[in-house]
Image: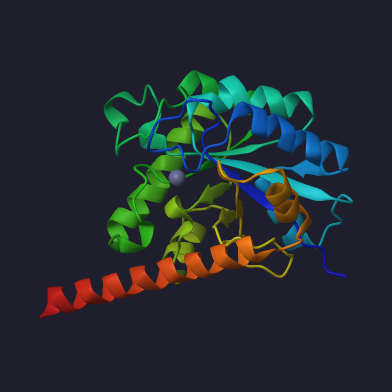
Length: 265
Ligand SMILES: [Zn+2]
């Protein structure tokens, strides 16, 4: 049987997140319960790029693998989420938007949605074994960028992170979870080894490692929904999410087409 692996996608972990991050955030209490569920159900955590390499090499996976990822690089990852994971022995992958880093200084770019990690925190997390992945520099919709800007977004962000942590950054999560074939090629050309998308499916070894699907965990994900998401007992909730994701992609495609028509009219 082909083993499918849940790759969970979190954002902020806070009792009082900013309005902009609220819907996709979870409370510390929920995270504690969810990680306890994983531990008690015999799941073994892996980092995102370790799972991608295992898929590529056809290497054996632990009995019940799970990957826990966090997007954007909110300060509460270091303060709240990582201690919860570390206590239960779960590794984590954090995809950091480099221009949003709290002390990015002259490299600051885009509009951070909440309090962000500092460079020192990112360095400390990497030293503690957290995988630091990239998430672009300013969090744009990558597929909407021209080639030069796309290249800049995914190369510069990576270089800044590598400078902070003193080790290679192997993975990237596309902002908004969306990529096009051109974006995936650019990520490969920039030297990344694997990339995360969001399609609300479990990942399998036959997936393209430049678009490994992740499962969205949000504030409204209750205990039963979480168990269903992790164990793959896909209920109507997930089917609905897949439809929504597909719908969003086609809206974006038609927007882009409309732009093209207008631009060339
Ligand atoms: Zn993001």
